[in-house]
Amino acid sequence: MRMYEVGRPAIREAMQNLQRMGLIEIKHGERPRVAEPSIGRMVDQMGESMRHLLTHSPADLEHLKEARATFEREMARIAARKHAPTDIARLTRIIDDQESVSADSARFLEYDGQFHREIASISGNPIFSSLSQALFGWLAAFHIDLVRVPGMEKLTIEEHRGIVAAVGARDPERAGKAMADHLTRANALYHRNAR
Image (tube, rainbow, N blue to C red):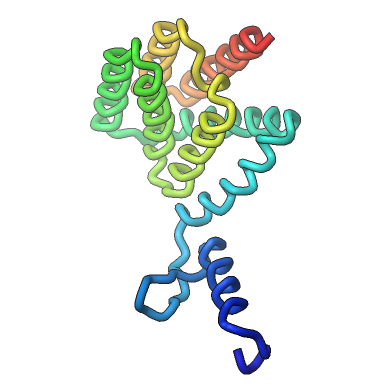
């Protein structure tokens, strides 16, 4: 306050902005502290920019879909190379759970996101897991019709099972193609429904 010759409200506002940026942590009754960097915090910060872009720019939505398709195809290929038997069992359980809630749109979508995040987590790279969650979340939050088409649950489940079969067979090319086909089919249907 002395150095910049400003009052408490200006300092408080500056500190709140630093907190929103994820640079400091403020706890009631304690001094502000420099925040420990984390992938989750970084993704949250990117989320604010993505929210703005996706709300106002159809072209950026197309770019996001293209980025997601490329990313997810590579995640499936990596999963085919790196998975353990427990990963395949976990993916199969997620699909079974997703199938059991086919009539509940919100829960079906939750399991859909969980399936795609789990594919990314097999890489062992926490950045990939965070990016997967963010990409799916951005699409779901701002364009739910791009990650969920009612009436296509059975086909989605079949495609998920095909992806897992290719991953389980340790066939990276087949796994990548199965994921790409899944997302391409989904995007085509979404465009048709949007029209």
